[in-house]
Length: 375
Image (cartoon, rainbow, N blue to C red):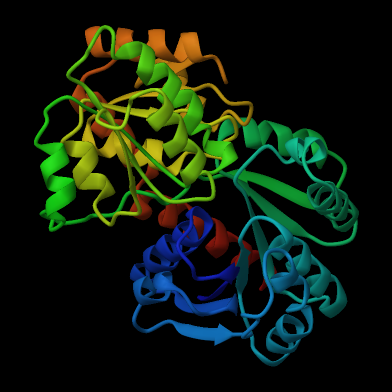
């Protein structure tokens, strides 16, 4: 089966990792993989299947949604000249462009669009998100396609939005957990921090959506109960200076480590007491799944998308707290340290539902059925 995966870039990011993991999973199932990328430069390129074909539209001078928008002609040309059984598109404007091209070509290629969030939430976001939403609605009346919702809330939401359309809705979890061998931390500074047995950890970009100021404030309260504990945040972003300034002003520099980017997130989680996701917005929650795989205890804000809620089984595999509520986050962290909601074994078992192998098999089964329909 010939499968193409379309995405904006191969830089490090959640969407890119999902597409790369899916490519590897489908490759192992015998699919002929082509990666169609607007800008093919980036760290994730090295993680692609060795025998995959890479079509790079070289839009490196463009950023964000402009990359897929200005790749429409190249995508159209490629699909016209090459027989592809299925085209899987990353979320965002990549999906809109895939639909635009499919409408023009009237192709037999099956179009699969990944929806990593409740699509209706786009109406509450920026203008470009609203445009994205209405274009999806427009093309849903014109093109046969398949929405791959990655959690139940996204699935239910898509069913309502595309009730009277040519879209069919499916639910398949993100492919997050790989069969990785145990890796020793080769970063001495990070390893020294983790020698403290009382580490609370979080991982992600230092941006508004991750709401790390909330986590730091909640941890500040927790220090009164657990003065020997440390907070370790792995990730970089445009809010690093403001977060550092808050720590300096509140004498937290010896207790809070804004460590920056690290390749040892999983191993760091294994050595920590608690993983916390303080996001004010979270489409799915890839890092929460990773935390589950290590068996570490988990606390997460219950964001509107419903992603963390489903990953944690509504509170069965980790503790959920009210969104953007510093007191509730503090209380939830304290309660989870005192009395875990589930066992380590239960958390690890739950993470297997999000394995690359399990997800790739479901995609393969769906695509195989679609290919048989077009014969």
